Length: 144
Length: 177
Image (cartoon, rainbow over all chains, first blue to last red; front, side):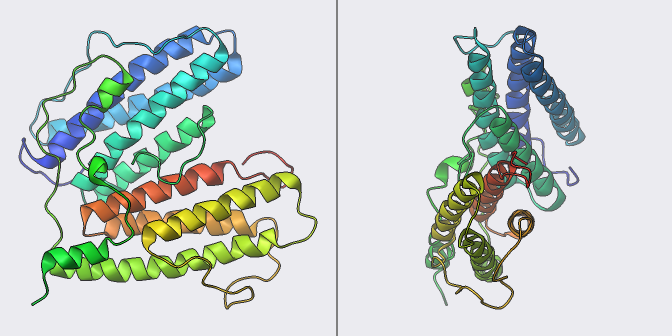
């Protein structure tokens, strides 16, 4: 994230919104990974997803701070989707989390340009692919 | 002096409803859980100027041509006799995707005839994955270059959708890539 708009700029707002979404996604996916322990394949997919979200969360927090704003923090707790019993439930919940993140990155694409926009496009692609890995059907325009 | 609003409408002709894509980030966290999203200042960036809109028109023209080319590769592959059922299903899904993308980009469907320049008449097993990979990169590059934010969002969405479909293409040994 290279340019330095004002703290209350559309770019900062979009970064903060994506960061808030990543906080929520990370929390929910960590719970899903913990509950998927008997299914090692699913747990592996979810753990990779968590690591990816942590990386993007840190990138976004750094980008917000670089613009002189205080990065939005995580909530104390998030509502979990239900039910979360069978592996199919966990997969569906994970896919829903990934799918729900795409609009945040669409907003970031709209608000940014050049290398920042390219990063946002990469993040959008990554969450779209993660959704498919967790069983989501491919879409024509995921996220919009 | 052209009317900028009318010009913008023409550039975005064929673009599906995108209002929700700009500024939708706020509230996404609510979909994921029960957290309170940050305060919601507008994330709508300024629209492109006339020069930017002209560049976007050229960008769209190029994309329509490239889409016709990649769609022709898929059509040629689909026409091959004896295609395995899994691959036939995947090619049919790609063909639907390309038609939807043509609609989104305001392009005619299936504009390149079989055997057109640059389109293999009997593409091998790797031709389609490679063409789709190039198409996804092309959409991403165009999204970065787009002057109009809503066009950037549309192209980003099309790139993400292409990536999703590409991920489900069967590999030569019959699995998903």
